[in-house]
Image 1 (cartoon, rainbow, N blue to C red):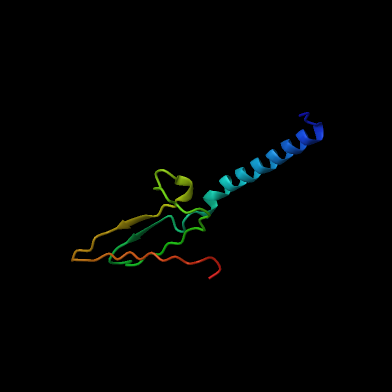
Image 2: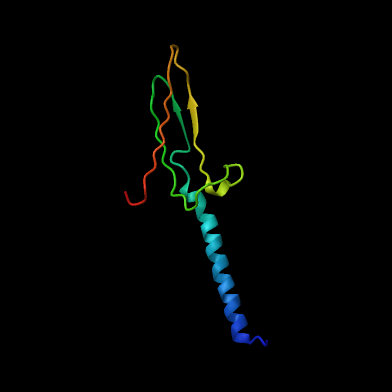
Length: 97
């Protein structure tokens, strides 16, 4: 089969566009990082909130295996001088709600 020059140029153009879209998505992913990236709870400040996402892909593996689909939040707990309990709640909000 003979390949014509217009078909070759069209293929190159399509490949270039797809490559640019992939690079834009990869470069934009850090912009969706958690807010804030870390928090500390103590007897003086007993609550912390975190918001992350949106995540375009689900993470069926672990964050070690799929860093691009993970977000990280560092929680530091300063123990009180008396007994204490730390409760962590995770809730999911559907887009548009």
